[in-house]
Amino acid sequence: MASMILTISKKPSGPRPLDIRRDLKQVVALIEETFGPELDAAGWAALRELRMTAVLSPLLGLLSPPGQRLNDILNGFVWVEDGEIVGNVTVQRIPQFPSRYIIANVAVKRSYRGRGIASELMRMTLDYIAAQSGAWAMLQVREDNEIARGMYQRLGFAEIMTEYRLCAQTLPHTLASSLPGEARLRPLDDGDWQDVRYLLNRALPQAARWWLPTRAAGFRRNTSSGIRRRLSRWFGVGHKMRWGLFFDAELMGVLDVDVLVYNEHRIDLLLHPGLREGWSKPLLALALRYLQPYPHRPINAILFDYQQPAIEALREFGFKPFVTLVNMRKRIRAAA
Image 1 (cartoon, rainbow, N blue to C red):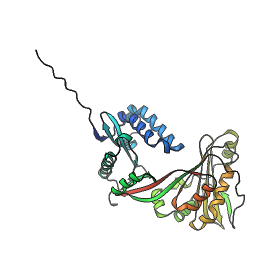
Image 2 (cartoon, rainbow, N blue to C red):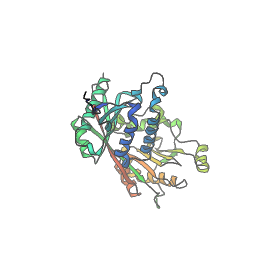
Image 3 (cartoon, rainbow, N blue to C red):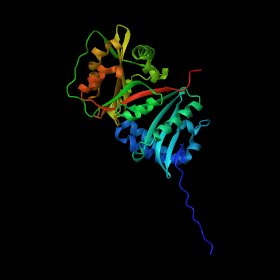
């Protein structure tokens, strides 16, 4: 009687490049499991977009623009154990700055942590960036994630600056009604973009200018038209309000309010370093007063470690830190 030997092949395990068409659904689930508790509205919107991309992943090759590779849309590496994705690293080239690559979604399933999976995926990612002639790798990590920060430091990443994301669920009841000192405040329009650019170059530390370089188009997005602002109140559409703080004819500060009726409002502040201590609190109070007639939605602000007076003012107004991120970078190769 002939004997039959049945061989059961084990599913492959270990690291491999991300395959968008078959991996994306599992990757989205892993990202949500790992980072869900710390995502803000923008983060959840990005995750929903990624989930929709996973649904369409079999068609991505047909939908991508001519000349654009799938790797330019979404790239990275995954770690597989018995057919299940338990680790992920995403890497993308920044289109406006082709020598820079952003690393994100460094995630490992909880039951597989402590095995060196994240470190190996990161090494593969850095090798990939070097093979693409990338000059810089960039990433963000939670300030309180000491294990991840230590890993990135051992891989050669250096901390640049700390980013504070703050949120208030409701507007404060009492706000100051006057501004200190002799200054003029007026809405900025598209004709002011050169003054805004000049202020940015003076007000931002060198590390901040490197991390968030803004091209001319960014300086032109100033105050929405008066018609749009009126429509925003009457019909519930969003708009942007941008004020300039002038001393004589010199622009010394910019205050932004994004009214997003069906999402979270956003406020932002840029001040000349010499004005941060005395002007941060009253200007932020003005931004919050401006929001009072609009639907009461949560209010978000993103500030950095060089804006401590503004951070302290928002805390006084009832804002709570949502997440604090350390921005890090690693030089892959010297500039040509």
